[in-house]
Image (tube, rainbow, N blue to C red; front, side):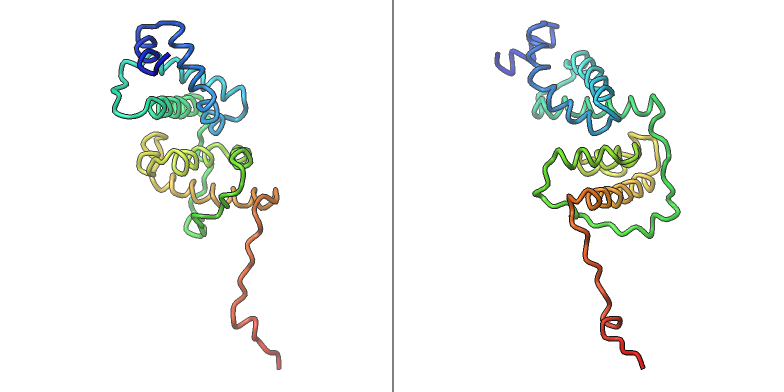
Length: 194
């Protein structure tokens, strides 16, 4: 079945076309859901609801990009809506210390397996992992995230900074990432006692 046949068939509720579309994209989309969920069952529920929306909204797809990207946006939005609906996204942030956070944009080495990173991301509090996924993986801006999650933009930024710091700590504790070497100041290295 070609992609065009799959799309046209799915739009008119052809069961075999819809099954083909689901089988083609559900494994990747389950991975997307898994990053937002607490466990596999929640991820599967998000996936199911996401594909219901895909099939009911497929007539809105305008062929102005790949179908996979459109499906991914629908699934991500579904995950966010489920989180908000269940009120699982709470303000677990204390932004009073946000200015003290040192962020390092490239702290994850590229050689780490994606599965290890996903497992470590899943250990983050829900607010942290949601913002981290939306910003670092999905590519949304903090302004867009704030609107999606109905939070302040500064909250999105602080959640992202804290998520990166916490993720770095988790990766270090699991010995996936090496602990950064503390730099000693020149004064302390050459300080003499009298």
